[in-house]
Length: 199
Image (cartoon, rainbow, N blue to C red):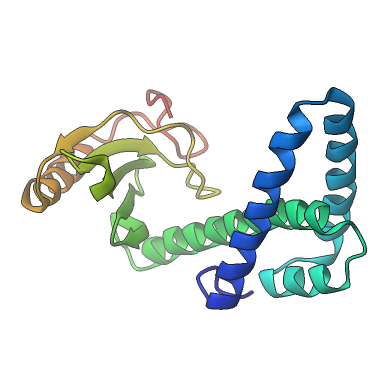
């Protein structure tokens, strides 16, 4: 499967999303037009789900598609989001299994410059650290979430978390929450999630 971040895929996804952003607002003003558009995009999406099981295959399917360009692009936008989500889920499951096999207490599910997600393997409770300079002050936040350890999916939304004004405080808060969860993991449900968490 092509890397979602490669130039060709990134450009295609931008183009597909731009087409969808043009298409749907116009259709919303007309109920019948919206219904027709939903049916048309849905039909193309059904075909893409059968034909395209990777982003490379999706790019190829677009080249041979016969639907109106914007309809095809809108369906491609949805299918691309599905494929990226499926890949992310596989990556998270693999990270969990790898951490278990090596006897680690925590698995790193995401490590990016603006987002870090680590899950506690005994409880499914996760530390979610985000950095967004566009948010203004404070640009950093550390929150707790719950992950289904069988699927690698988040079991609900994160709490509001703790705002942090600088990187040092951000890193310290991540360590504090890891220590808190590791020392008091809480009850674990049969699916590996914490039933006391709201997400």
